[in-house]
Length: 354
Image 1: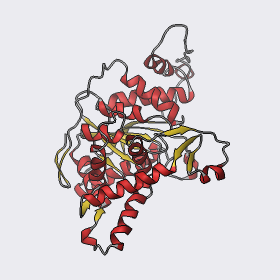
Image 2: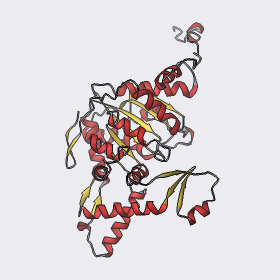
Image 3: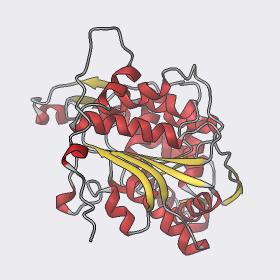
Image 4: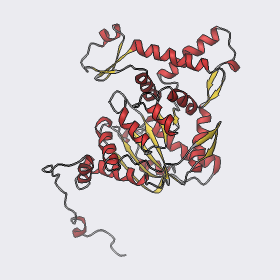
């Protein structure tokens, strides 16, 4: 049999390029230089390249963004909002914590610089919550919880997907130009929150539920979130898309949900292809068998990532890596908006996809 192994010369044909900071460079220039280096720098550059390809100007790919972790506390709120406003995100799946903290800030409240060596017992006494080296005001959190619950009560009864709930909250955030919820509402980007009960939004809705139950309300009188409608809607988005790409910021439920959207569409409609482009920023590892660290290659065994997909994972903490990736993409665009897919809804039916 013919020896198909690469030759020694073929393996040693591409030298590593040294990063040159002797001239004034942009973020994009730096990320382009990363492509000739090694380790996570090269992977970071490859993520930029993948993002550029999946957001081609003709809008042939529907871009899903999975958003997990403490992105707001990390100071990434405006970065994500900018990506939404120029059409580089078409659908978002996120944790309740991210959208809750965005709403909390849109209400005029803040995250504060803290200390990892804080006296946490004292912080609890002062009703200050700690997210590593960041503080939040528990008193204002509770006010926000209650306000969300009362807002839902004001809508009366009915069944809502989390997309509909996020749009209701987003409409109230549009005066804050930095709001993720507000930008998504204005740009028509649906936000899904599949594990919403595990968040302060869920707590706020629970206080409302108890209050209504105590007053004698029956099931048909209460605002109900129906996350199975989310699945139905996500399957329609996948099915109607010419092709799809995925950006995973962190892991957890949002990553799995965007992957499962492929399976949902295949089960409901058949012949669903996996995501053609994908990259993930994560600090987790695959050895433990958990979803957050599992490789995108592993997802190919499930059919969630297309067999011929271009994909990459980079192990750099999100507060460092996302501004670099987003900065490289946004430079030179002159804020020209991509011709993104249009998603309009009639109830839980997708009226128009691509």
